[in-house]
Amino acid sequence: MGEVVALLKVYILRGNRLVVRDFTSSDPYVVVKLGNQTAKTKVINSCLNPVWNEELSFSVTDPLEILKLEVFDRDRFKSDDKMGHTHLDLHPIASVSRLRRVLPVTGNCGEETKLRKVIPGPENCLVSESYVSCVNGEIVQDVRLRLDGVESGELEVKVKWVDVSSSASAAAAGH
Image 1 (cartoon, rainbow, N blue to C red):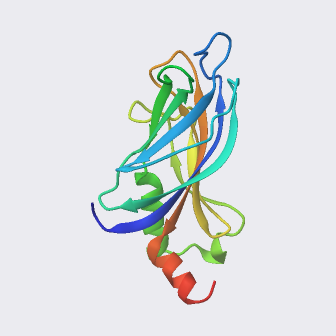
Image 2 (cartoon, rainbow, N blue to C red):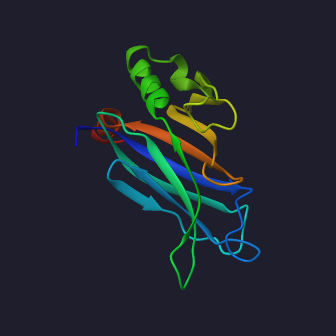
């Protein structure tokens, strides 16, 4: 494993139009993986449009890995059913972080400054275009991700990139 370069905060916001895996509904939860790190959300019972609003944190190392997300239906008496999987390439948000260190955005990013546009394509799972933005000094990306391997379903996710050097500097400065 390489050197830790950042902290990635992953906000699992909601699921939309998830597939039925029980009789009439599902009990979904999300498993998120970055390299050898894994975290999961709580289970939302009997819901195909769950709202999690949960924050999961990961250490980002160099070389950069792909963020992988899998949705499962919790079952009490048998193994949990798969409800789809998706992924997010972290290169766009990482490149904006590097760019921001070299060319600081004036005004501490103001309320929101869009710094990079990411469009849906065959190499990603984006449902619609996404922007890497600087919001009140923080680098964030809001995404809607298509679930693969199933008939329907999307995840709404927000990622926030926190440089290890900037968080260490802020801690040293007493922020």
